[in-house]
Length: 215
Ligand SMILES: N[C@@H](CCC(=O)N[C@@H](CS)C(=O)NCC(=O)O)C(=O)O
Image (tube, protein in one colour):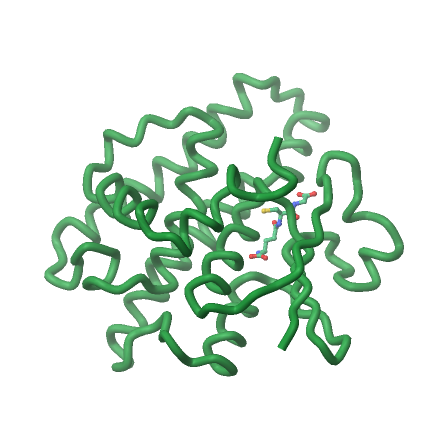
């Protein structure tokens, strides 16, 4: 199966999807968009995803999938190996909870259009936008650090010793944090997990600097 991945090198939801595709050994054609130039607001892009957001995964049959977590769950169903979720329901719920903490509680408050909106509508300058970004990262990363540091389920990665959906979301968010120079030493467990993920080829190759449109 040949996929076309409509995405942007620095987009953390794109990092998530690239990591999932790489972990499952799936190849894809890389189609880049420059978000700041409005390239996801064109009629052609909106026909693929009316929300005007990357990533979009174009399938061989011409179908377009949007929302990184929905796409990753689709991959999990259609290409189950290696699994990105544990087997038993309790563990799956834990992994999803860790993943959603990043994907639902940090990222939506801190993405480009939100930072742009608080800038244009509420006069938040660069320093204020950074303070906003940092606040929402700290709020959830403090909780994540506690959840990960006290649990016997935490291993080399968020759940034992094999990467899961939780690691995919965490890895992508830490790259975002780096852009805003967030001090990661406040969260030693997360810092350790990130370093171990970053040593793995499927993650390293999904990271922003490894992409063809990286600047
Ligand atoms: N929940 C969506 C988030 C998608 C999203 O926010 N994408 C960002 C890049 S990470 C985007 O396209 N931003 C363009 C904009 O904010 O205008 C997902 O997981 O796919």
